[in-house]
Length: 308
Image (cartoon, rainbow, N blue to C red; front, side, top):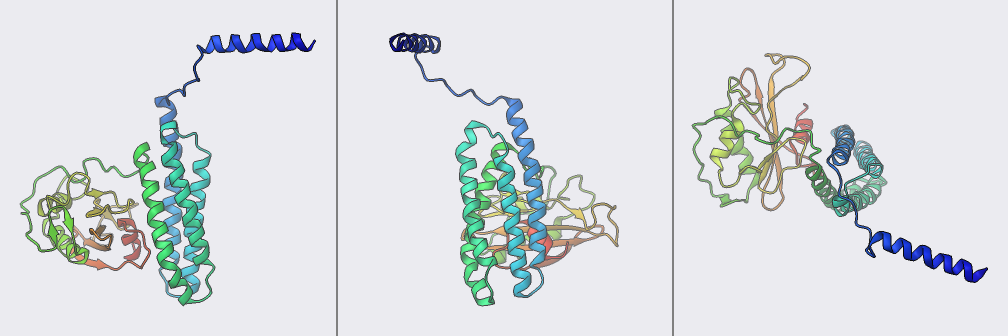
């Protein structure tokens, strides 16, 4: 009986190898439908994450350790929920490494935020800030890789500010060398001036001519990928934020509901600064906005800090 069973097992193994051609089964490429399904699911999770992140950031706008730790814990929850949602998505096989890197970075960030959120003194909170800020940057960069790969971002960034003409000329400034910016504060000041000098509500584009003028003023720095949507972090030597919006986007713009454009800029050293153009009918009023240490370098973070 044992010999018969062994013989039968051998026959089955030979038949199986013959059917497979003697080769390892190859992973099947992800179909467009499957990829689109994953992108849609991740976009939904990412949108929820951004909303939760913004709400968590808002908790820390008021001074005090209690508000600061509450903000950190809420931000931690936002990343945790994104991690949980992502693990339930059947991601494309070619994104396995990127998704794993993202989940690993989120895990490290959560650990850092847990430590900072548990602090009981202002001194300990501030001492924990560098580690959590660095972990936040690493997590955001890793998340953006997945967002870009899936095309899951909600900002219509392709062609941002690329239509229309401008009379703005290139600026000769000492803080720009080729494609590198060395002083983000000076840069934000000039971006505000250029924007206020060129914005026009009659321009048929969501930037009202601002981004076109920015690119004309800094052509080597702000190429096609130098300006991204305001929910994204500003790239190195780049700007986050290009759309002009009414303060209350549920109502038409008016003198009581003026336009605004919030943006963040990052220089070659990774330093970040922000500004806002506002007003009606043309948003020409300028304001430099200071971001708290550890804040996300994005137009959305600047808008929140400015009270929008």
